Amino acid sequence: MPDHTPVPVNRIKLVAALGVTQILAWSSTYYLPAVLATPIATDTGWSITHVVMGLSWGLLVAGGCSPLVGRLIDRHGGRPLLASSSVLLALGLLCMGLATHLVFYYLAWTLMGLAMAAGLYDAAFSTLGRLLGDNARASMTGLTLIGGFASTLGWPLIAGLEQQIGWRASCFVLAGLHLSIGLPIYLLAIPRCNSTPVEHSTADTPPHRDNSLRRPATGRLLLLVAVLLTLQSLVFSSMSVHLLDVLQLLGIATATALAIGMVLGPSQVVARLTEFSIGRNLHPTWSTRAAILFCGLGIALLLPALPWLGFIAMAFYGAGIGLLTIARGTLPLALFGADGYGTRMGLLARPMLVAQATGPVAAALILERMGATPLLLVICGLVVMSFLVSLALPSK
Image 1 (tube, one colour):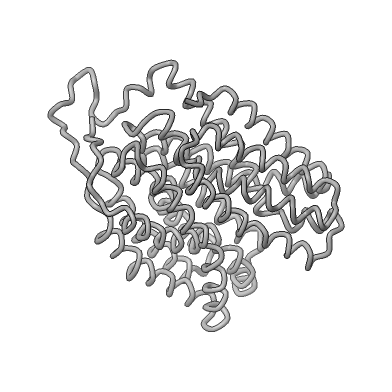
Image 2: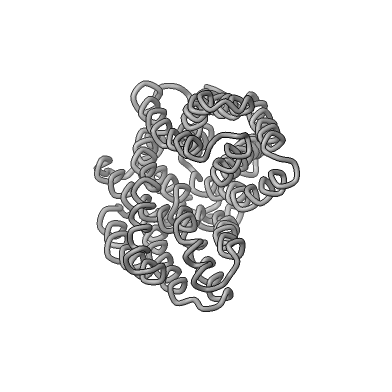
C-alpha cells in the first residue's frame, strides 16, 4: 500500500499555488464555451450546439479517466498528474485554435477532457489528501475560496483576448499560459509524495489497491456518497447552464435576471469563508446536509417568479453550491480517511462528470417542451432525493 504519512509542506504556499492553477484550468475548460462558443460558431459555420457539445464530450472523457487518475495519485502523488494536465491543456487549446473541422475540434476537447480528469478539483483534492492526510480539510476550503474566482477572472480575460486578437489566437495565448505559468507552478510548488513500497505487496493483495473498497459496509457507504454527489451535480450543471433562460421564462426581465445571477459568486464566497472560519469543526455530513437544504430552498424560492425573491433565492442557492464544492472533497476524507483517498475520489468523479455532461441536455429538453416551472420542480425533486440520501450517512 502507498505510504500516506503526511508530507511536511508549507500549506499556504501549496494552497496558493493550486489556487492559481485551478483558476487557469477552470477558465480554459469549463468556462471557455461561455465566451468563445459564439465566435467559434460564427467563424467556422458550425452550429452553436455542436460547439457547446465539445465541453460535454470533454466531461465524458474526464469521467472515463477519473478512476485511473485517482489510483495514480494514490500511487505516485498528484505532482506528475497535475503537471501532465497543464501539458494536455496546452495541446488541447493548440488543437482547438488550429481546428478547421469538427473532428479536430472534438479531438481538442478529448485532450482537454484528459486534462480535466488530471487537473480540476477532484485531482487537486486528492493531491491535498495525499500530502496532508486527514488534516486536509482547511486546505481544501482555502483552495475552493481561490478557485471560486475562475469565472470572475477568466471570463473578462478570455473575452478581452477574443476582442483583441480573435478566438484562435486566444486559444494559443491560453495554451502558452499553461506552459509558462501552470506547468512551472506544479513542478516547483507541489512537493513529491512518498513513494510506494512495492516490496510489501503480496500475491493476495495487489499493489496500490485499497482493499477496504471491497468491504460491503464501505462499498455501500461509497455508493451513497456517489449517489448524493451525482444528484447534486445534475442540479448544479442544469442550473448553471439554464439559469438565465429559466429566469426569463418566468417573466423576469433580462437585466434583472443578470443581476440575480451575479449574486451567485459572492454568496459562494461568503459560505466558504463561513465554513473556513466557524464551520471547520462541524462534521462534513452536517455541512453537506445544510448545503443541500440551502440549494433546495434557493430553487424553491424561484417558483413564485418574483424578481425581489430571486435575489434571496440565489443567495441561498449560491451558499449551498459553495459548501457542496468543499464537501465534494471533505466528505469522502472524513468518512473513509486518507488511505485510498485518491482512488475513491476518482471513482466518485466518474458519475459526477457524466452527470455534468448530460444534465444540461436533459434540462434543455424539459425546458423546451414543458417550461421553466416543471424544470424547477424536477430539480427540487433531485434535491429532496439527495437530502434523503444524506440522512443515511454517518455524522460522527
